[in-house]
Image (spheres, rainbow, N blue to C red):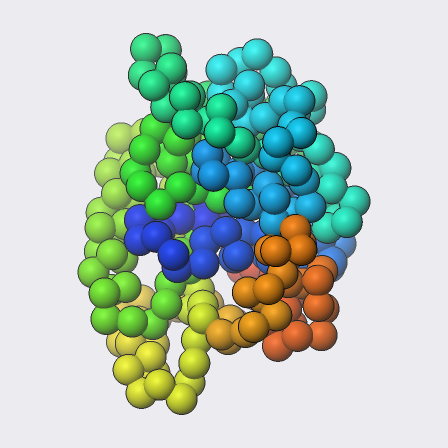
Length: 255
């Protein structure tokens, strides 16, 4: 079982879109996937066809050790993968975790129990570096960084790389950047092309070959509670995510 965080400290870069569509793409090519929503907003939960308001158990219960992942994860048949959902309760976990022992290892411990059940675990992290994000980073083998090819994106990336280095040094020796995914890409914009070239020059093989285009169908999909890959499989963005999923599987074989 390989565990990946989808993280970027900059908000609005398409982390949730990347998480749910990669999960759906991997499921589509026959992988067993668990999607973990670590964001109290619960967007990845809703975007996976699961109503966060009706969750009996959530990732909150798992972090506080009052439920196991087996008990709390829901099989979302519409999308083809399992969801460990989040809702508003999770906002309180931040404060409650501070006083607890091994507070940054809670998710890691819980995931060990389901290591035989899944091929991939994808964790949607909140945009801030919080105790929740730290739980994600401490349990992951690697980080997938979705980013827009814009000027400020490069600045945010430096912060994230430093955070990952610190977690790697102090808390999780397995953690590494798996790759950078260019999202919401529009090749007609010269600046985006330039930033894309800079990324490749600087991070070379860490930049995924797959590029996710700016795509209306991907943007519409969450309002139907589905990943774009399921909502409109033939859309350009959806096809790009399935391509990305295949590239992920190949990359994992080399790890």
